[in-house]
Image (cartoon, rainbow over all chains, first blue to last red; front, side, top):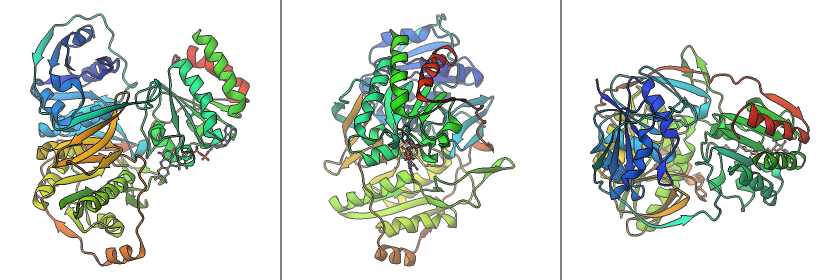
Length: 310
Length: 245
Ligand SMILES: Cc1cc2nc3c(=O)[nH]c(=O)nc-3n(C[C@H](O)[C@H](O)[C@H](O)COP(=O)(O)OP(=O)(O)OC[C@H]3O[C@@H](n4cnc5c(N)ncnc54)[C@H](O)[C@@H]3O)c2cc1C
């Protein structure tokens, strides 16, 4: 039997919580996985040792992991990972890595998996308008969506092996351009509050930002908002030609719920819609729908959340 | 002078309703278009030609029905159109191997593609072929400058990074602040007459095969409230019922 390998998801220099979900997903594929932690400092790998269900942790240590280069990361991880099926998170960077790693081993890659049943994997296709189930007849590289599988509990204590590795970096970063605000990007956030054309003016996004800062959310937008107002950059756009997001909570404010917007957010765990039109299609996808204007709803939402967080 | 290739894929119109009949999606009644991100890739390829000279080849893989997406690319301004002929379903390994083989045959020096195709949403093709060719790759790029190889901007944790990319390389394109050009009448006339170069490649076997398509699980009807004041109740439910705050 070949191994199952989890590539730990790294965010801000530490192991991201979604790694524990990958361990659960790996177990569903049949075996207790080896967790490989790409790192420049092996001590960050210790956090993975407590994930119950991991059979072993390998701290793959290399300068190549200082910043992302697809070729460099794929070669450095390939050198460390045993043969078998490899699981990664389904963030944009990890999907890119999954594809490169698969090609390096002449394997296929299955992206955005949301259900596992033995060797059968299910992913959304056609922007979530249908689901596709595939069968694996050999090892593959598989990316798994966040917030779908339960996190494996902590409390385990498995061995951590530190292995030095090297990667052939193909590109070089000239400069990082940090976002002006400290707020998370929609692609990174677990809670997103998005505004659409119904916000009336880009100036009114301050109301969304205030709520975002209260609950640690990112601020997103519909394409109509991005296209209409210069102040709303495309990096905020959620949807078919923007970002695909999969947060725990998505709050859509003044967004009608066009099919191309839904394409980017319909797999969110909980969806709240605030819209003055009771017939807006977004309500068919909302767990909590408020028929009303944002002018009425947002101040109430802001003050309730503020007192809850205090 | 660069030998530039852009990968294009035909997908269902993003407005189309997707129906599953039996255990497969039925796309027979659906209008097919160029995958939206591929439009940004075509635009970037044409900009590359304008900056450095050379020729742009649009490459797709599929049956004769896929010629339309090549004609669309031709109408926008690419020089050559090539299709790898296959009607069958293949896994990513087989598809990427075939594309890499033909890219080598063509003598490609730089390849642009969309950041993901609108049907699968996978985004695997660009990085996958780069690895097979032993090239550099950067995905989800939002701007490209054509100097010293390429200089691209792509998202990076906490913001964006400006990255030097030596050629040969594969770049997958996001929208950024790009405006795509539309075909003009002359382009459309030329595209009508243009001949698709059809290539056949021995396809590798697949180890991933589609078992079934299904409709997404129906979401149970949500709770609905009238009036903005209900936001207080919704906030409480988000904490106490959904446990997301
Ligand atoms: C190829 C293609 C790709 C696309 N990609 C994307 C994409 O990536 N992302 C995307 O979002 N769209 C995308 N679109 C566009 C999409 O079809 C819609 O046009 C867009 O999502 C509409 O944005 P909206 O909901 O903000 O605006 P509208 O549809 O104009 O809706 C505004 C909503 O605000 C409500 N409203 C108005 N005033 C108030 C108020 N005071 N309080 C509360 N509610 C109010 C209205 O009732 C209405 O429902 C794409 C389209 C195409 C063809």
